[in-house]
Length: 492
Image (cartoon, rainbow, N blue to C red; front, side):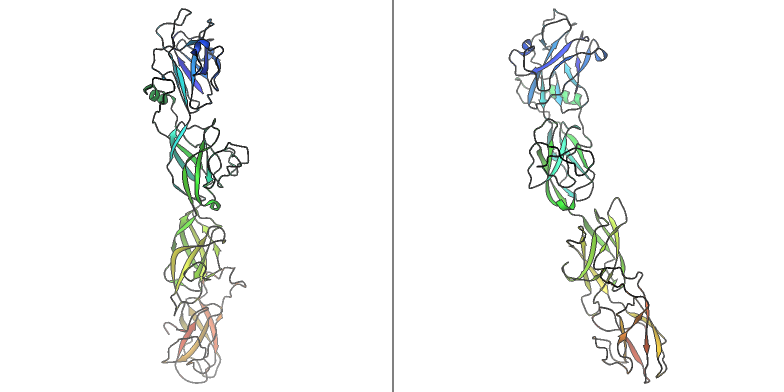
């Protein structure tokens, strides 16, 4: 750390020495006194020394201790205290560890000479450890870029933050191991295994003002060297976790802090790691069965590896009602990862049932599913038209059908006019030759209907071959694949 000294009559070759602040005799015994941890003897260099200023470097290492500043001008053999004209503690203050200048004040009224008689002013540096006070964020979504804001004092780029699972307490010394994020931000102690993505790293930004710190401490009170002198000046440090936390480490986590000369990490606060989530799905009303539907999802921290499925029931353990059974999302707003789409066919009964489905989401590639609490309201497809509408007796004729969607497995029958389409019987109330039969769809389904996408857009045409031996008027009934009962064609 650079320290700037201010005085009168300074010259290259003058010396500064930092000794333990508790040494008896002060600077008069500096030649043999115990040096402050990180302190040393430093000579003023020509390139940075004028009559009134100079710069020296120290790296003090023991927080909560004092270092006494001793001075020896060129040609002298004695070490003296700095001048006593300033108040206690105002001679200097170490606030964290930065490359900015800190200040020793030692102004006197005349040039330095062998005749100068300077008395002990108990000029010391209060070495105070960086202090985290509180963590602002309380929650983070797994995978999302995270910027933690820590309010405290004395943060620098030598500070380290790490995020641990809540069952591991902060503490212990750092040891070398591979940084899992591979972003070059530092190494972690193996016994302090972080959450994935929470590896040790320095703050992305911090505030540290040497002059401001000195100004605050210069006005504090205290008559003894060991008196507390706290500035109550809060600073903000931002810690960046660009990779975000893994969804494998959901739950409470501890945010731990260590400055460069500390022996172990200390806890700053706790944060809740929440899973990626889907917050809305559209459409969710009037969803057509058996026809692939393109669903648009909104959420947090979505990925292409996430999957959805739709079930017929009140929980995600219900019968799969989507084809494929589940399918991957396609994120549409990378890197925000808040929008996605997926195309699946919703299957099962519609008419004669509650016609409701549940939407389920998995962020771990289908290992577990979460019920989104979103109900899909579905409707059965229907036949909209048939051609021709008049058939010659006793001749085989092709009748073409057009509907909302027509798939292999759909069926049609013709019943006497005046009866209702209902139930599942192929023969109930049918005209002769109009018994229930499969519709010949013009598009086939995939061989593995539960794992492969269904045709999109959904096919709408098919046909049947009829041979009706008797004259009469009939009603067309339609039973879609997976349907619960026959229903009357619309518009015929």
